[in-house]
Length: 260
Image (cartoon, rainbow, N blue to C red; front, side):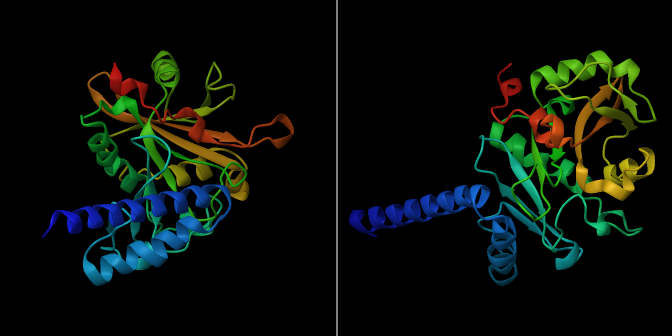
């Protein structure tokens, strides 16, 4: 291949990448169905027809299309990824998330933290990583998605300070996180298999099951002594007080912790 042909191919690839970036930028600001269109219209067909999930990083259809998921790099930050179901799921308010046979997407998202670590070029301690889903008032997209990225250093330090206060039942934290009063629950184990945060929220906080769309959920990796676990955080939107229920606020898309 001649140099001019190679340059043309590189230029075309750059144009395509730039076009995708612009598309994703528009997705988050103007089109609430953009994530669904990307996953359903591009990633899934590309995986099925060509064995290539692009523009997604991964498409997992081992449970079937209706219960599978895709991993997509978010436009913000170097290490933020999104887990998006390949079936149509509107958001945290979707009744299917509380069904007896519901997929534990948070467990899948925790496994997918490897994409964040790869982007950062290092393995991260579990207490530096987090998962977040915003309430229906705090999101821009109407297709379910979990944000996978580093936790804010201030939030990590606060959770370590609260560790002895966090137990097996939902408990209000003694201090606000980013100005909001979260409730916290301790879950033990290296993974979230058998502990679905949506069901723990619906079963543990009075009134939550009937108003799931108002809630935001954040899962922070944690180490309790020599035992791995998680702190699950929940907050409820209060529009009158300017709280839109955006648990993503506890994440750091610049991942300052990776530079420590």
